[in-house]
Length: 438
Image 1 (cartoon, one colour):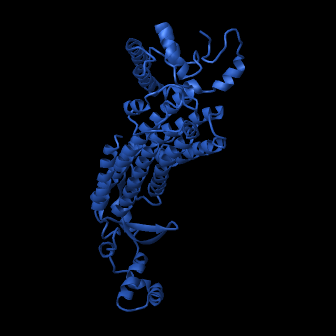
Image 2 (cartoon, one colour; image 1 turned 45 degrees about the horizontal axis):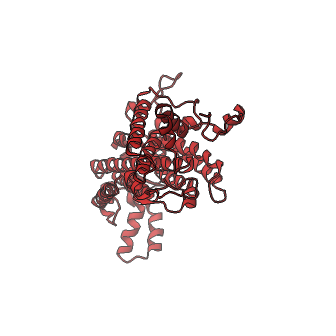
Image 3 (cartoon, one colour; image 1 turned 135 degrees about the horizontal axis):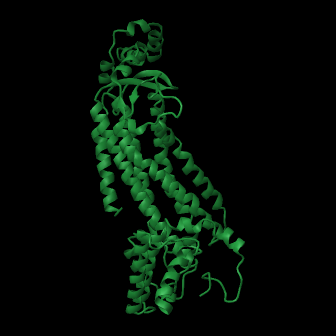
């Protein structure tokens, strides 16, 4: 058997060229390998359905694919530089063990649709994980919002104290944002839920492949019909998945930024558990929020990967080898992004506000807006009320933060957070995820 699936007998392949062309493909394919094996199993069963393989041949191939998957999982099979890529490793395994039967597995498919379907399965699972993590984070934020009650805290604009707000309002903001992020991730998962297996190199094949069977067996909701579009969607679907990850990480970054400020001695609003902090190698007194800072830095990793994908997609229709380079940024961003998101539920639950510091930071001038609006309710034009209050800050000293919060009853405001609505949206998201099979 030639060293490469495409190599002609008697020809020489320059190792330097191959090393450059393969790049990190083998290492990256480790993230796709089990999906590739799963799709190969379904493809083999599909070939048996149309008579290309006998039932015995298909059973033998599927049994060997199961052994390969088990070996990969327990470490007895290593996907390494012996192989050009994961696809080659699968065919080499089958040919070594089944001889001529193993050589039949690639009938009716190309590495082009082979990598597409493996990547699509990875994207679907990754987005399902993202939905789960957004739900967990939103739930943790709602728990904290309920637990904190009407505990006051300064509300900031321009990083300057502005009005009286509440800790519950702050947590509820992130609860709503992560419900939104979960909905976007679920919508993205539905959008990419199309099976490209059976489109081959991008033009279909002269076999009556049972694509509906493969679609059902792989759990996709629909066939990606046009073979040219299947190739054109590579990178495009990946970009949408990373967009969903990036949106979640935008809120992770904002949460982390807030904690970076609130945990400083200057604010002193938040105390983090020791598990979320580190020390200094030289300063014994330090307690550093390194985790928070690294979470704050997570978004650029995904943003950079998206920029790589967008640059690579400046291509004409069909398959081009450039598309191989979508794997690296995709997998790097998915791994890093989901790792960051996985820390959020515990971080939210571990975020403890210091009531005494919050109360001390709530000053009389922060009641100015409330007073101006009260005056307008008694008939004073707002701009006149605004001017009077600005000149009479001293009259605000007797006002309480609790009264300010209780009076702020516009829907969603500190006096009427309507957490039940957010809880309802979270439950709807969970149900929609279940119905989507994710």
